[in-house]
Amino acid sequence: MRIRRLEMVGIGPFTRRQVIDFTAFDESGLFLLEGPTGSGKSTIIDALTFALYGDVARQKDASKDRLRSNRLEDGQRSEVDLVFEVRSGLYRVTRTPAYTPAGRKTQRNSKATLVRVVEDPSAEAGVRTVEDIASGPSKVGPEITRIVGLDKEQFLQTIVLPQGKFARFLTATSDERERILRDIFDTRVYVAFQERLAEAAASSRSALAEREHAASGAMARVAGVAVPEGALDAAEGGGDRGAG
Image (cartoon, rainbow, N blue to C red; front, side):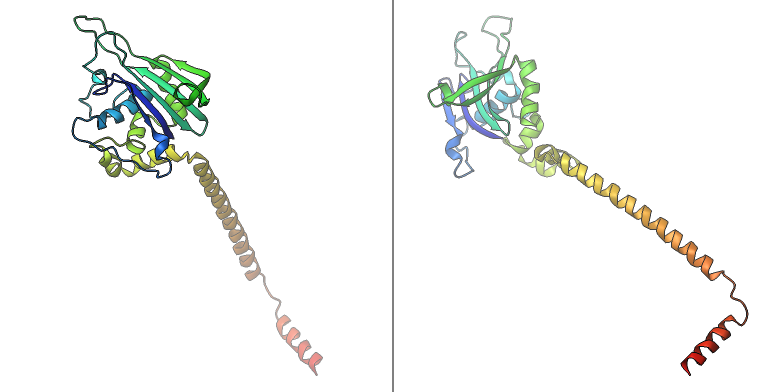
């Protein structure tokens, strides 16, 4: 999976529209989020995670309801727009966080859309929609997991490691890490091949054991055959006469 472009507005400290073009880091393959405390580093990670999974990446006491900037007026837009790439193509997911307007008890629900796109330099965000896939958080979430091949926890342990959670993958049990890596690299075909090899080996061992048993039985029968008295002497004598 490759993150191509992140756009956000009204998210955390970013009240104005902010765009991060991750393709600028393709050549190096690595990049660092650096800045003083409160500058919005964790908000970028939260925005990525929220766009994909509708939740934030921070500790359990963090609330996605606080993703919307508290500096906005009730009518101002709050949105995350993410373009990402996987083997099956390019996709664009857009989400707006839920929030409760000041002085009201009724919450404005979160919204989400997921579309498949193709590159188009002349279009907004450099991509053009070619297929509508899902609309609404309850439908977008499962589609994201299916397309990306990772659920939120796996995503946070492998693709994006937020502050304080890097050790989670390192300290995970061997079974947990095996499950994560199996899902990431889609090793099902290798597991199936390994199982077939094990079955073939077991079948070969069984066939070999049967042949060994048959050979042992044949040897036992040969050893039990009675030799007529004088037969060996006659054979040896005949051999001597032939030699003379």
